[in-house]
Image (cartoon, rainbow, N blue to C red; front, side, top):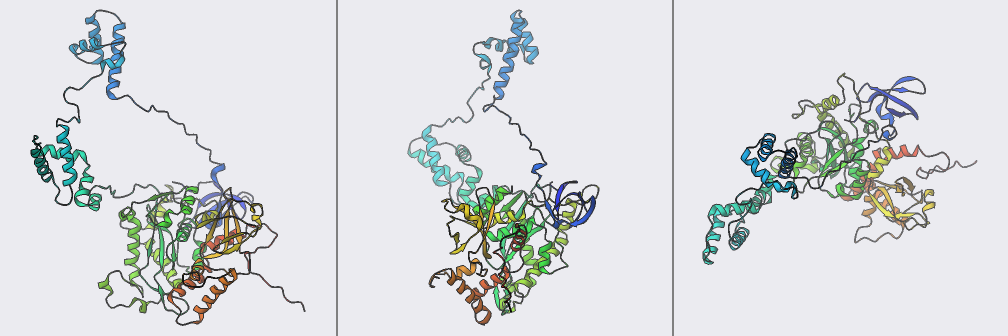
Length: 608
């Protein structure tokens, strides 16, 4: 199990320190090498130093194996050949040679007389190979004509619920009698049925794919896991509760959540709540929430009563076959950061049983008691009007959901015999009772950007254009004129900047070419480009229409639900979230000097 080890180098406030010990779920003691003092700090304030420079590479020796190994019979023949050759070399009469062979091989003398007689120096060990008597295994006594009839009858008659060997035999009997051929018995036909197809295939032809899968597919009761962060499961689900918008308090929509559970501890490592449908952004935000310490996120919620000390990078993630889980950007980022992706087979939800059960736990154990709950059961819902009773805004629901997760972590889990929080602490507490922590990400910003959605673009003297919006950075100058297409990463909730990956895997940040334009979301951009509406002529008209939509929602009482959802998303994206937090962290690392075009323009005071 990976964990931060004693005296491991970490970075704190720009100084290299050594990890000493963990003192609580969110604090550790480090040794400040420069000041020669021990300091207790929060785990979220530390940065990891790559272990690549201190952990030697292990040279793996390749073991050469022969492609074709000798069979057991050939091994035995070789052993007997060597014994007989040695006995003959010792000289003596035939009787003496046979006696020595019998004693050394543990065989009877008559048998050894036959072996010595079969011994042939020129033929080698093959002269002593044993051969079975009688009919060879798999040999068929029936004529090829009858075999062909049986095979054809199996193909045509073994279908549907009424398929059985009696039905097939009756068909074989009729065809053989018509051809004046001997009729094979029913047991022979039964053997051909069983030998020609597997039991699963026979069940599939008789009862269907689902019945065959239910009967023969492997369904282990539990995964054999040894430690936290070894295997996660991730999935999307829509919440069975309607929320209202912040402006008019009218029914808006049912929010979506992307949940990630650590199967070993049953801890919810992270999640992402949104009012837009799942996408690559949902995956990136959920994973980033899971791997990072959550101090700043809890501050943004304003809920001091919530504890969320779980973080770390998974070794493997179990997923269904959703499009965003197979996106190129997701697979690239997972390979780069050594996260194995395991997609389950189509229409097999039991392979994601832990995350499916977690979804059900929150829907039936928590959400159904909220005002505006839709309730999946029509009988239970009755005359309850979910839209009319809806009362919680997205921000309020966000805090409520975080508290519900916190309650879940502190309640006893039936399969664990303890709470998920206790299981987590137990896993990161050694035999001496000393608490430790999982390793930190080496570069959290790059990790997050790797998972963002992407497109490819060429860079012209004017910059690059994405979604008909121009971006520029001075870092583009060496790339201008190149015909190569570069990967461009973008955040659908904030289009004010993009990140361009160069040939060496590093990212260049590029803001709007016109730094005075407002930040917008991809949803707002798509709304004004729908079919049947006049397309905007230029970049300025795009932003003019988006701002007009925002003003419409703020002033109109009867704005459409869809428009309110889009504008609500833009409001939420301007709040504190993981993407913005990491972006601000990246800005602080910029070299001094030059202008930062991502910041708003501050006008000069007029001279008097």
